[in-house]
Length: 470
Image (cartoon, rainbow, N blue to C red; front, side, top):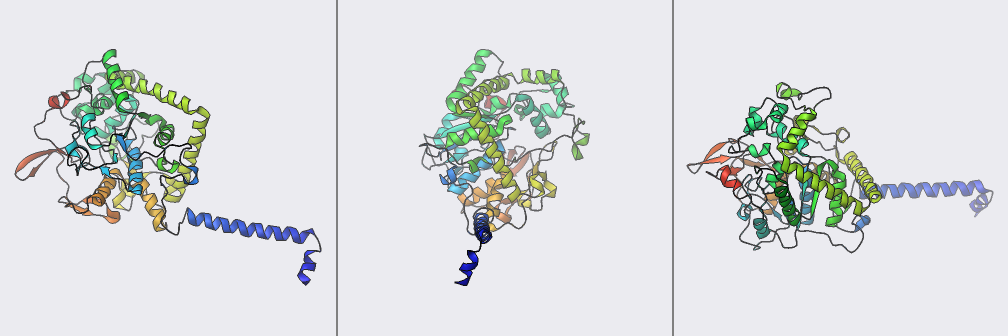
């Protein structure tokens, strides 16, 4: 008991003992925290739809597991689709997947384009989100009655810039123009509505929603289209306010914060300041800089899209007001903080996207198209298996992710010729196919720019004739 006598000698021993206990407890808690989050000992979802950690919005809401996302073009929609892929994979949900990579786009969607579809509601599908030209009656044959429908818009001028860069060699109207400014000055000089893929050059959002993008603008027409979209979709997001959109979406779906934390996917290499052309191989190609007059001309050329953007921009901020400005700011800060944490855990180079050629793992290199380089990410080395898999889901490119889900959902289906399974389970092509035509069983078939098989002898006039209000 002599040590107790030492303990009674003064407060110094008490302070030292308290300090040692606190330090030991802190170290122990730190080890437990690191093991349960950064380096988990056993596989654990980072994106579970549950009420753990208070991540699910408070109240009596129930998470939506029947979700339809209209994936519009060049609107950050690939990042949204990745989020849906992650959650669906994690929860074991059933995806409505296309046979190729799009649902027969640019033709209007039909239910038979869904792999495994055997008739209206014979098989239950939970999530649908690949590119399509929207056709509500056909979608309703596939998705349950309680499905949550949402989509995303972008300022038509910014969308035109991105479309020109991405579809320059695909859309005849863009291909003929010297540059986007040249196109904006006189779009009718280059635009022929009869030519395939020219829909990328005019009212692309309107087209994706299944409406007639070549219709002459009138206020009454624009308002009817807007009303149709409001009837069909419960939430319309804005790519310019992506983080605020994710907050509204997660509360609408009753999903946890981590479900909507994401890294930007399918992003293009940005043009350096002070230059009007793209760097690298694109340096000799057409300039993308626009004057304010040309920007206004693009709004007029895409007047139907511009109407949609203005209308749903107003609706979006009305939703933010109902949600609460202060509450929104707090949740956006939390979301961005979470993204920074995950970037430090998951990504090399401080989380900055890199050119595809620099990505060592070919299974996560993004698909390249158009004038610009599409960027991707590299994983941080040394991650344990569970953390690596969670991080990989966040950066896996859309095409590889779709292939992986397809293989898991249809494991007995025969692989298409020319495909092999890469590391990580993603299917990759061995022999490139012609981007325009090919031969199959002696018949001539036509393929879109991403090698999706198109219906033969379908004219643009036939497609547009179906773009009526429903």
